[in-house]
Length: 152
Image (tube, rainbow, N blue to C red):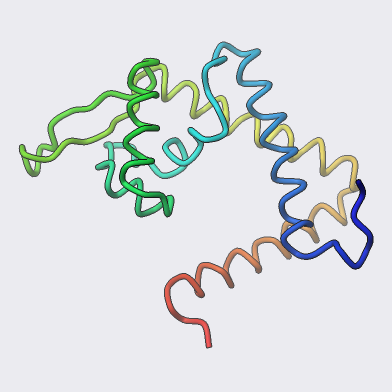
């Protein structure tokens, strides 16, 4: 069922392109040697720091429960994308760190995202693509400020 213009809320207008991007991205990742990655793994790759991150920090950044993040981390560890190592600043704590395979997957996903964005930009035309990017960057800044408690 196609939504009517009245049903095209901001959420729907943001969600449909995001879901399409995700389907394309993870389909292409599978073709490029990462068939076991799923959209649900995205938060780990998106929020992990280069030197590694604690699972609790990843959960907080991704706005997931610690249990959900632990599940994602364990599935990625079992598939060889991340490793769990001692935190050098606190030996009681553990860090989640990308393996070489995980770093390759992360780089490939970023490259694919840029390629897909470029393709959509060509279909929209350069002026509309620039305008869309500017508007999305403005909206991104608004919601980031809001999440920091700066909203009215």
